Length: 145
Image (cartoon, rainbow, N blue to C red):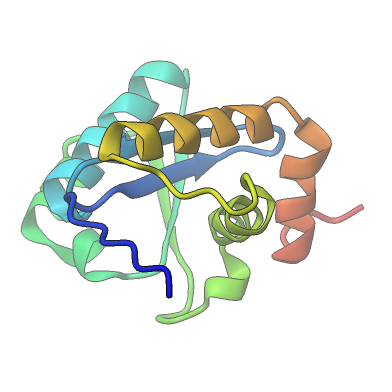
């Protein structure tokens, strides 16, 4: 019998997706309001102009810090909401599904840094495929052909 103990801290991922590309960040902790605000600030630095935000009303997005961050972006963001629980409508959910099914088979990281390295490598490889990213929007029925 093979036993493997994962005793390192959490590795969490967050992503923002455009029509042909996506940005992501990995965090060594669960994603709560501070990492989410950090990621939104990262997106605002990378993407010029107005940033449309489509949220699903998660606890992170309903937090005081999240509300303050969005309010402080006067004019830089357009906010819209999905139904309360609708993962099938979120293109980023298809990033994670593809990532899980197309990562290295039988991969067993020996430590946290190896897990983080392979996660970044796989996500960057996915990002270089604009047709794949467009397929995530099509799966969510948000990208008409």
